[in-house]
Image (cartoon, rainbow, N blue to C red; front, side):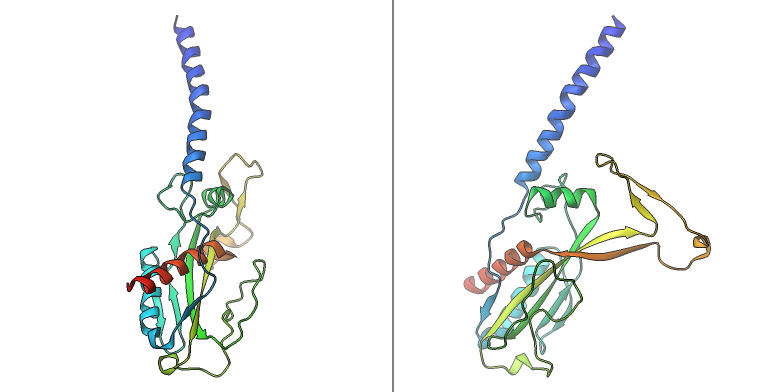
Length: 224
């Protein structure tokens, strides 16, 4: 009888585990965020201060408080926010199930940079696979422009960067179902002073850029 009960318990476990994983998958799909929103927000020069504050507030609502606010050059940079996994559907920051799994398998975070520039200034074309060099994606001219005194129309773009956490000597297991890592030390690493953990930009999140710009646009349309 005891052996029979144990077999029954294992049978129930094998039946519930796939069902539980399927439920997690469905929840993860439901937690995916919308991809809709503009790539650029046009702002009248007379509303620049209002638009600047709206961008700061939109980022704050996303859990990314501003760490740099330069009204003269029109640049806002934020702190990073940890990305949600499929086990955290309330963090709807993934645009697809694939992205949600990436965020689950890897420790990732996002940060946003807003840039205002005169509307008549040609932007620099960006592609999704372009290296993240930290250059000025909005195409601002070499000569600084004080946007607080600029009378013409402006355009606002957002650059959302996905950063991934790494550890020195960290290697992912080749078995895809095993979420684990092995830490290895090279010669002389015991006395090394270099940091053993760091963040590296791995991609731009264009869907997130559109969503946060949609929030700014909505705030400007509703007056806050």
